[in-house]
Each structure stands twice: as structure tokens, then as C-alpha cells.
Amino acid sequence: MHEQAQLRLKKDEVEKLGVEAFVVLALDRYRTKVFKEENLLLSKGKGPFAKEKSLVFATALSDPAGHASALYGVSRKCVRWGSWVENHPCWFVIDRKGTLSYAAHPTFATPTSYVTDIDRVLEALTKAAR
Amino acid sequence: MTLTWRASGFLLAGFVAAAVTGWAQPPSPLEKYRTLEFPPVVENFDKGWKDRVALEYEIINAADLKSLRAALKDDNAFVRSMAARALGILGDKASADALADLVQSDPEYMVRIRAVDALGFLKMRPEAIELAKKDRDAGVQWAARIAAGHAQVDWDDAAHVRRAFAAGIRREAMGSAQVGKPAPDFTAQTSDGKPFRLSSVLGKKPIAIYFAAFEG
Image 1 (tube, each protein chain N blue to C red):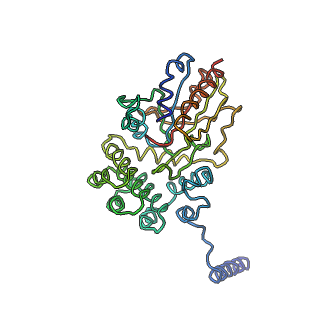
Image 2 (tube, rainbow over the protein chains, first blue to last red):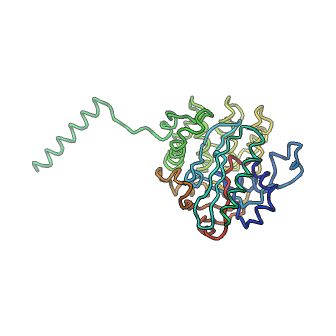
Image 3 (cartoon, helix red, strand yellow):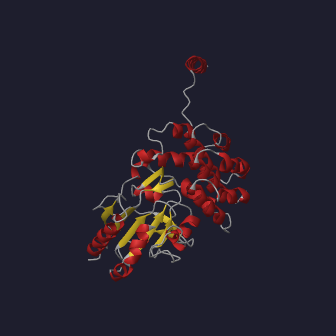
């Protein structure tokens, strides 16, 4: 969600590049809908998104058996962060020819990593848009 | 006739040998999950994930309900968790009471999370889901809030999840996405229930895909 919030901050730039954005959850449709429509996590804090109902402007996709997640090598199906985690949260960029042009596997070592991740994704999207 | 007697002889010898050495039964999917080289703990986050994915497919597609129900009482918390998950996805209403017991009394939060998830899939035992909202563990509280909403939806998510697992997965395709190569195609469902195929949008616009860890 934090990464989606960071992407949301760059929404104008993303739209200017004509990017189609997707977020994939290796979960059922209901949980995907919750992710898309409800700001459950950040609404509990005091940050800039605390009062916003939804942060996700990307199309949210339910990948309930984790098939797409496994193809892209991000499946984990592990206990982490006090819960079951289906995927390693990762970014991919596909260019206009359908070639995978960028992949990022963030480490989440610090909160600021989100910001730099999005900057790199935008850089990759700018190249992919050419 | 001679050949038939000879064949019978071989068969009998096979039975005798098996009786002496013991049947070499292949391990059940749940047994394989119990003995994973890299169990689903944080230390193995980046290790052994292909085995975990493949086994989850195998368990949900092939494990029998009787074994899964028995596994809710297994000594291994990961096996209990997986059994609870599978029973919810398989829509096994007969296991609702056992799942509710796990939600309320299993010592491991990871099991309570999977059990309350399963009750949401089954749309049963709402009082157990409500109680879990006050669980001592924040992860279970979160799962219970989601499960309570899940139990209210007017579509059958479990059936959709079962169909997705039934489609199977090829181990050699796992991790096949490579920078510089064509993006692997996949199908999914949008949050409002529409079918989606990546190839239907490829080659038109630049695309950003984010794979989220969980629903939060």
C-alpha cells in the first residue's frame, strides 16, 4: 500500500506518460477489491493519506492461485510482518513492444526506499514510453 | 496359459517383496508440506518458494478432505495452517466447527489467521469471526475484519479460487519473467469481476505492474 501511495503522488506524471498501471494480488477477488477501494492500512496513521478512502488508481487484479505471481518470480507464501505474505512486493515495467524492460525487487529496508523505488520506476516508464 | 502362470508368479513375488520391504507409498501432499526443505518462515522468504507454490497447488487440487480435516489437529502449525486454507477454498462446510475452534484456541497466530480466512470463504460461524476481531494478535484482528466482509459478499470467491488452482502451474514456467524478454502472459480477474489477460493490453502503452504482498 505504501508503494501505491507513492505512485499516487506521481499520478500526473504516470498519466502524462500514457502508462497503464496494474496491481496484482495473489488473493481472491474480495481481498483485491478491499485493496483497491479501502485504505485500511494508511488510514490508521497520521500521514498525508490518512483521510483518503482509496489510494489505488491502478487496475487491481486478482491472481488467486498466485499463477501470475509465480511466473514473475515474486511468489513467497511465507510468514512475515506478522501475517501470511503471498508475494515479495515488486515492480515490473513493460515497454510498448511488450518486452519486460525493468524489474525492481525493493528491500524495504527503510521507509524512504519507497520514494526512490517510485523514482526508478518512473525513470523506467519514461524509457518504456519512447 | 504358461505365460499367465508366469505373470502370476511375478505378481506374487512382487507382493511378497513389498510385504517384506514395506510399500514405498509416495508421501502425501501434506506430508511433503511438513517436510519442506525451506518451511514458510521469514528466514526462507527468498528460498524454496517454488516448492511452496507447487505444493499449495498439489494440496488444493489433490488432497482428500478426510486428510485435510485430520490435519487441522496436526502437531505442525504450518500443516494446520495449510489444511485450514485448503478447506476454506474447497468449501468444506463440515469443517466449520473445527475451524472456529482453531480461531479461538490455536496457540499460533499463523493458524488462527488461516482459520478465520477459511470461515470467511465458507461464510460460516460469524460469531467466531467477530471474536477474532479482538484476538491478542494484530494480524488475526486484521484477518478477522477482512473475513467478516468476505462472508457478506454475494459471489462465490472460493469457486473462483478453486478454478484458478485447477488450471495448474508448470514448474519450469515459474520465475520465467526476464528483463529484455517478452513479458509472460497471464490471466486474472479485475476487482469488479471482469476477466483480464495481459496480452490484450500489451503493445499499446507502456505498462507498470506492481505485485502486492497482501491486501493491506
